Image (cartoon, rainbow, N blue to C red):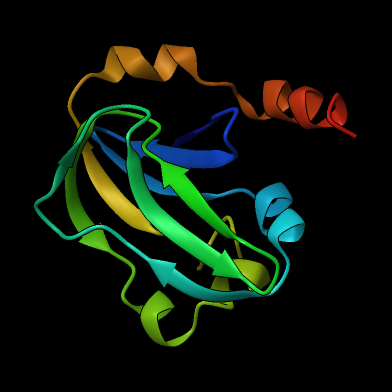
Length: 124
C-alpha cells in the first residue's frame, strides 16, 4: 500500500484501485478535540477537491475534500458514535471512507510522506 497526502491535510492509502481516506495527525492536532464527523454515503460519487465530509471540533468545523475522484464504497461507521477516534488514531482507526478510485493519474498531484512532512514543516 502507498499513502499520499494533500495540501488540505487529507491522506489516502491506496491498495489496487481502492483508497482509504482520512485526515492527517497534523490536521487532527490543529482541530483539537473532535466531537462530530459527517462521512459521505456509500455509493456517492465525488470529483477530486470536492467537499466530501465534515469534521467538527470544540474549536471549529472543517470541510474535508476528496483527494481523488471516485465512488464511496465503505464508510467508517464507528466515527458516528466515537468521533474522538480521529484524535486517537487519525491515520489508522480514524479513517473516514474508502473510495473506488476513478482516475489513478490524480494521485500524481498528491505528496508522498516525505513531501508532506516538508510541507507541514514549512507551515510551522
